[in-house]
Length: 164
Image (spheres, rainbow, N blue to C red):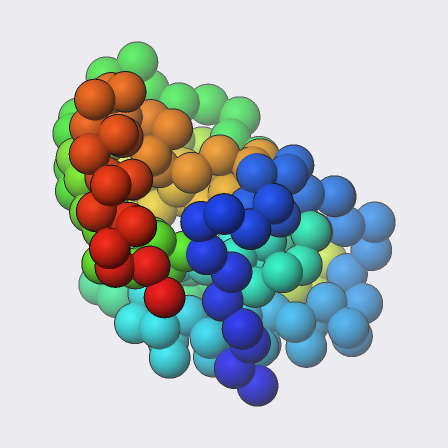
């Protein structure tokens, strides 16, 4: 089932999400709905707070050869390269707005899959960027928090004109 997106201004996007104690059938159903919503919105990643659920769950599909679609419950970045690079990012919670964001080139992320099994993902490039973006979401951080104050101010002015 496609779920309702939450947009900039919704307090849930600025709140650190709660850890998931146990992966249940309810969590698996939520993951399925999150994938459906992400694809309907033409995204490459989605975090539970973006659909109004304050839980540490993300779904990712970089739509390339680098990785198959996957879900992560309680994702945590345990290692990030000191080397960074700028890349364009957008966000389903700020549709129509993109900006260059500096992120680590590679990361190691741990968590659980939708079956409750431990997972460790070593990622670089686009996948590393998506993971950092989505883990930020479950920590109450948006990509606009990672750009300069001037660029953020300009982006927020544009947001006032295009927000849903």
